[in-house]
Image (cartoon, rainbow, N blue to C red; front, side):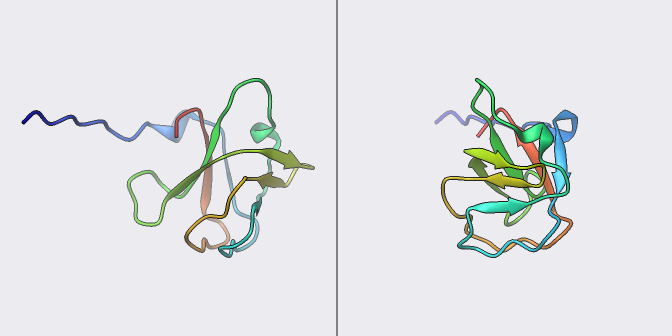
Length: 93
């Protein structure tokens, strides 16, 4: 049997911000310090909460932004995330 290994993408060169309030599962909006780099456009992209490869790191497609401090996602995340958790903008899911 062949094994295929795909490393997590290096998101450290991508746009990032931090949660400005605790996220509780059930919500479809993230309150962040600065959402300007997450604004829509023609390209579909995702938001990644946490460092890739760590427990409880999650990804969702971004549906929109509201103002300069809110990133909206179409579904809820599975885990709670604390204020100051890193949030990356990623072209990969």
